[in-house]
Length: 313
Image 1 (cartoon, rainbow, N blue to C red):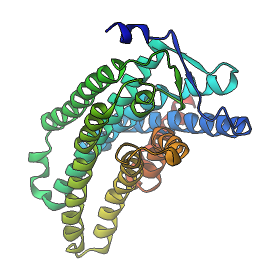
Image 2: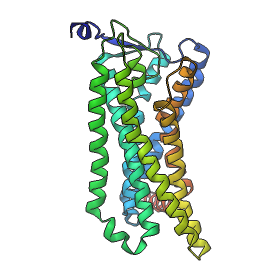
Image 3: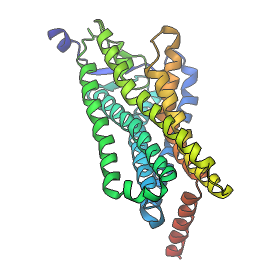
Image 4: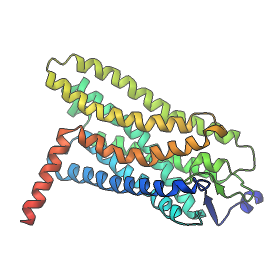
């Protein structure tokens, strides 16, 4: 216990790619542009989903939750990363690191489950259209969303506590851009096999099981869509499901690579880039994927803009 207490530093040093200073300017530009697009895109989806009555459906209720997650998800890490890139001392306070670890892990876990719920919503809409309003009623949507948020934050409490309790013996150089469980475990001066096994087990629960259920649901969805006689109906069904499937591949693919592969020195830099992809690039792409491929969202956005300009006139 004393060892753990002595190993609590006042701050951590986030190394990132500090050994390659020539990368700092390009990374700063990429992070800043991605963050601005993430804020703008997800805020627009939340606004049009709430202000346009035609989008008051379960699908857009869950999409609003996803956009809120992505907003908070990136805000928990990107501002600090931008500050550190511009600074010679790339540090974060212990409290800031704890908050970053907890929020990033909670929201990431919640998003894993929420994407699974969104696939269930699409499954019911296409495979059980006559019972859709009965199955996906407002109360059930609220219950499913609440279950995702509660499960995600509960997982974060457990994993954050276990990770932060590990003695570090004065080690405080985190070989990453932000405080994440695998990077913090590497600071420990004791055997972390049990923690890594626990992390692997939790990752299976929050990554492999949901993605397996999503793939099964999409197998049924494809069968149902192919039975639709109308070409327009098939195109619309594939359009809404295709957007969600792209998001699933981007998010789960990179997260599974990060959390379910055996650790190795050769994959160190690749792991950093992969974590940046699911932590920054994917939240930026989500609004673009859903708006560019979705006529309903584009129509709602045009109606919102028309209302804004009419009010100004």
